[in-house]
Structures are given as structure tokens and as C-alpha cells.
Length: 333
Ligand code: TYM
Image 1 (cartoon, rainbow, N blue to C red):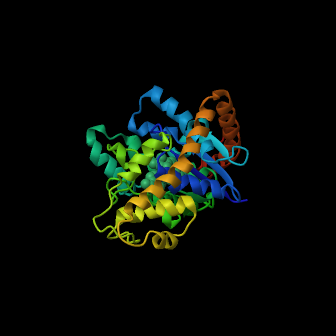
Image 2: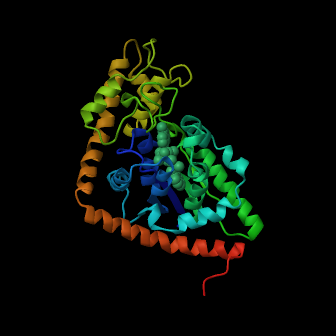
Image 3: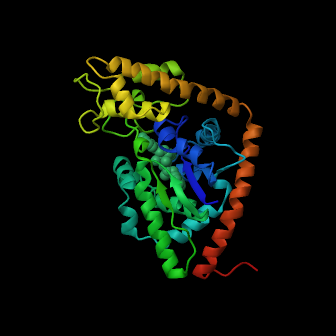
């Protein structure tokens, strides 16, 4: 079976609906027909200088949310990135074939560095996408299920793999992004021209998978739309409504056309929002309950993560050995 790999950063307490729909739902689907590796990318989280206690807690919380969302730890290797030291080691090798300018063109880096200012921007933030390339290439992943915001990082990963292969001989599989269109970019509820994001300061902008359902209900009811009050799917001119329709469709399985027809006519925004709130909370409420159960049993979480890391190391150590040999590093006697 072909391999897939993906990961999320433990940089917030809760996944948001964008993480869930943009990535996790596809992980769950793909785990049926692939050999999946899902890691909590704690080394990536270090790039934003998290508080150590919080990082530890959020690493567990993120793993518990993988399980709560339907990742089956028997089918999928669920692990913590830093438990498999090959990630950091391959990243170093890849750093040495990455151009300075090439890394500097990553738009996520430019955004984050722009916000933080040069003094607060670490070298780690700069080489972040190279570590991500290492994550992917270590597992010979053919597909990488992520949201639209990761597309450029995947292109870099492919470029690095190609460069390495042509310089040192076939060593890495070229990964394809897996980014289904409808949910590739879930938008903010308060500014539907911006993506839903962990770093948004406005708590009303995103749906937290771990909030009480009644909190999310309120947020959806106060989602920003437009003044036209006619439900239609028009992402360009009616981004708020398009976002709600996409969320509904992804969670309920009903097509957007069917939904548009159902809410046709004047003054149906309230009714649409009511239904979106229902479908969101009917998924998110049970997700939250399952999360709480997993978090209650740390010993079981530790067991799952240890088993996942062991499976991950099997593949990662072979790939790293191949890469070390290809570039001319002498094996330890
Ligand atoms: P992260 O932790 O920011 O986000 C996790 C996943 O959620 C997706 N996502 C979204 N999808 C749709 N709409 C949104 N509004 C939205 N916001 C976030 C992201 O695209 C991602 O799939 N660099 C990665 C983590 C990473 C990784 C990897 C991913 C590290 N190594 C290797 C894949 C493979 C990140 O920051 O994701």
C-alpha cells in the first residue's frame, strides 16, 4: 500500500474547523487505502517559542484530537515528531541543498516574519519548510493531505526531492499534494476573505473543535455575510455565504446545489445559519466528548504514541540511512 504522511502543529489548545475539514477529514478517508503516518509536529512548534508547559500539554491534546477525529491508531502510525530523531537529521541534509533565496520566497515565512519583525524571527522559522520536507520524504509518502495554505511547502518538498535524486541518485519518492477543492480553505467567520486561522485574535472568527457546542452555535449565528439576503453560491461576491454552504456540504454530505435550492428565496440567511450550526455542532459536540475521554487516560495516549513512533522509526531510519549513504557520510562502524 502507498504511504501518506501529514501533521499538525501543537500551537493551540484546540483544532479549528479549518484543520478538521481541510486536513483531518481527508486523513480519515485515506487511512482506509494507504499506510498512513500522522505526526504531531512539536519541533515545528518550537519555531514560535512556545511556553514549555503549554507545548507539552498541547502535544498530548493534539494527539488526542487526532484520535477524536477518527484516526485509528491500529491502522495509522500516530506519533510525536521529536520521538523520531530522523526528522531533525534529514532536515539538516536537506538544509544543505536548499537555496537561501528559495527558502526566502515561502509566503508563510514572509507573512510570519513580517508580523514578528526581523529581531524576533528565528532561523528555525526560516528553515521550517525544510523540516516539513524531511517529515514527508522520510516516509516515502506519495500523497500529503493538507489544506491549500501548505501547497507551496509541498512544491518546495518536491523540488528538494528532485534535486537530491538527480544529484545523488534516486533516493526519495516525489509526493503529491492531496487538497480537495471544497474544503481546501475554510474561511474566517468574521472576515470571509481571510482563512480561518489559529492566530486570529478575534475568537468569533473560528470554530474551535473543543468548545462547548453552544459557543459555536452563537459564532455561526453571528457569522459575517452580506446585505443581499439571497442565498446563492458565489465565492467571489458572497464569500460569507459560500463559506457557510461549503461547511454545511462537507459535514452533511449534501451537495451545494441541493442546499442552494433548499434556501432559495428572500430572507433565508437565518435559516441557513441555523442548519449550519446544527450540522457543525452535531459533529463537533461528539468530537469534544471523545477528546475528553482520550485526555483522561494519559497512559493509553503514551502507549499509542510509543507504538506509532516505533512504526515510524522503521521506515524513517531506512530512508535516512539511504540518504546519508547517498551524500557520502561514512556509516558508523
Ligand atoms: P497547521 O498545524 O497550521 O494546520 C494543520 C492542517 O490544517 C490545514 N488548515 C486548513 N485547511 C483548510 N482551511 C483552513 N482555514 C485551514 N487552516 C489550516 C493546514 O493546511 C494543515 O493541513 N506546516 C503544517 C504542519 C506540517 C505538515 C508536515 C503537514 C509539518 N510537517 C508534513 C503535512 C506534512 C502546518 O503548519 O499545519
